[in-house]
Amino acid sequence: MTASLLERRLPLFPISAQVTGSSGISRLAIAGCDLQELARRFGTPLYLFDRASLDEAVDTYRRSLARHHPGNSALTYAGKAYLCTAIAQWAARQGLWVDCTGQSEMTVAKAAEVSREKLLVHGVNKSDADLEMALQAAGTLVIDNLDELHRVAQRAASRSAELPNLWLRLRPGLPVDTHVYTQTGQSDSKFGMDFAEAAHAVRFCRQVGMPLTGLHFHQGSHFHEAAPVGAGLRSVLDFMTEMRTDFGWIPQTVCPGGGWGVAYHEDDLPQPDIDAYIQHIAEALLTGCNQRELPIPTLHIEPGRSLVARAGVALYRVGTIKRTATRNWLLLDGGMADNPRPALYGARYSALPVDHPDRPPAGSFWLGGPYCESGDVMIENLLLPKIEIGEIIAVPVSGAYHLSMGSNYNGACRPAVIWLESGQALLIQQRETIQDLLRRDCPLP
Image (tube, rainbow, N blue to C red; front, side, top):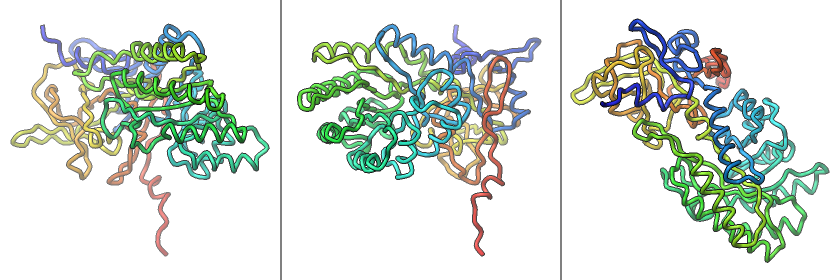
């Protein structure tokens, strides 16, 4: 028997999602909260984050690390996926590190009282202000290039305070299989240093006594096959062997980044196996270190998407329905201004109506936004029930790289964000207003 749309798509939603109601009245709910009521109360577009899904993702990573790498390990929440004060607070309370890029994200982490030792700073072109704040606030600073290393050394010479630990970002020359825009480890990537540059960095840090403690590399985001990460790790272990021979230096920590993918559409299910991903990395690290007679370093993983994506759901209201010669259009009150991924990467999403999500399909629909771009199409050719104007549509897997890459295109105001936990809905980010946009402007005299 063919599964219904609801049966196929509900596994994309947060783990607390369910259909409630009886007597022919059914609705989607998350964490015990009625999504129709949330849309009425807070307006649309609206973003929701489910605490239970966030916690479960962290627990999955921790169980896998305990199983496959029983030595020292650590998890970092990659703030670039989505960061606000409440999310940073959740990460801190979970004992996670928080990865920040630039002053703004560091300021959010500090407002959330992320401890210095668990604040980690990345960036491919850090400004002077970024570096100054990182030296004051971060426990670990990832050095992207030799120029940056020398700028840090110059600042260190005039400071009496202790420097953060330094990691070097390496470019292993091996991307993962993902969209070209999200590959980061290839030889011509803008990120990190090649091994010759990194050797210069190790020599320099040893000469001047800078606290170099780790190596970091990242090969891409939203991949589903771990083998390239194992290959990248082996090249990094070879580099470590050379650094031990040449300079007597071995890193305390090795971080192969993150980027493990998630299912965005029912055709992507089941969810990519986090345990298999961690097992592959941990075994490559253990085997590679034993073969090279290297001590086993702390294994540091930086998931962002695979922690937060499934926890997020976006709600939109249907404002217009159009029927052309070849397409049925549902035009929503949000789109590429809050979720640019379909336009940027051709990302494929799914959706369900909030009311009566168990209705049988009535046809294929294209879900577009209100913005003046033909590329403002969130979902193409998706089977849905008959939809009426005014209905609320729920798009799952909306927790990562939506709001963090959003814009004010066409004067769009960023959506409100709600935290869902145990039947309670808490506003964690206010809806942006037109006055917020005007506040930035400086009129001509």
